[in-house]
Image (cartoon, rainbow, N blue to C red; front, side, top):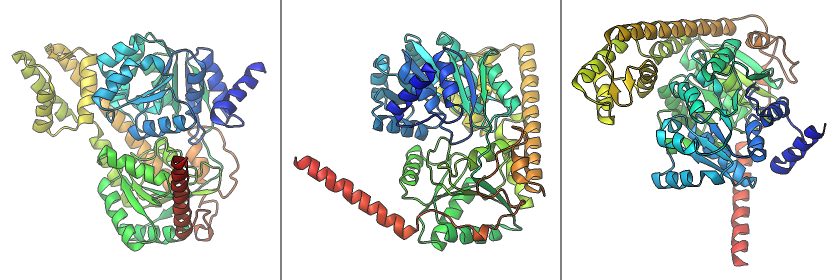
Length: 516
């Protein structure tokens, strides 16, 4: 009881929250006891508090692996606004001079956000290994798993990095992880004794609607109708960058009263961060985006999530719709489903990782370089990209496995004929298994979209037994009239008036302060 009261007091003192949300106290207690924890909490449940509070209470440095630069920037900004000064981020946006200064002063910080790519640099690991690491946090931990919906090759090296940092306790967090993904995370981190804190991921304030369509023109008409009625803030998810951009332009013309923008991974980082900040500050009403947007976004009043394209996995869908209604108020998750929509996710699955032919020619080129004594430098790697039109993600994936199996040591290529044949077979089989799994997941998503039963029950049944009674409406199959639903978002005119008044108030307060 004493421990519980103390944690409640610390929560109020540092974060001004009156009580913990389900799962937070238990995870924090485990972490403070020095245990490694796998925490699966629903979107919007406050996963960040599970490591931010311990970072304040533990001696030493807490490292947080974060997949998005914009997420790091937002979290550090929010912490400093709460007088949490000893937090810092290291990523590609930090200049070399700033990075060196941060590295020198790391012993003064309690919380370090860092990208998985930067953490692979020897000088960074060497510096961190000199410090007391009290906790190693992996945010969006499903990125580790080959079965995860957002698998990222850079996360595969984290198990080795943890060992080089003297095996600190690990906190792996995710909102969506099936039992298979959970097992894969634990195996990759080599933490068989990890404490598992798994909580139901259903959200009782979300209503699910699937609307059958026969063409993209019908989708556009429906988008225009619903956005006229419901305003914003709203997110529209696409599987195609080009279509996200095109629809953003079309909707801007059709709905001049709304501010519509697009967001995807092909944009410059500074542009992505600007769009995200404008959306957070209510300067943008609607974002047409790919899955690159939304991870860790803590905007409470998103009322409408629309999927223009069919997601490839249940986990991805649950993650994306979970950005709606984080304030607990009723919100709508609308999928515009055309049976022709499976073509895009199938193409994405087929092109996500290298094909057998690509692996073969890459290995042949590496063999030539190895026999000629040519080292792997930025120039030679760029030659690989140009020769074989290979994406950086594919190369990172291959390089990880080549290094893991001893084909590449540092910058040198080490050729052994029989070993290379075995590695080739292993990679081809591994990629085939993942593609087959992803295709099965896509078929599961199609079956859900075409189901006549309760959508909520079908959505969550692979993750948990049962779900909470919805506080608003359940789903379109259980009966919901979307045309009668009224959003609680501000009208554009009201929102703009509020916006300029606040800005003027801040400006005048600033002038008065300077005058003193």
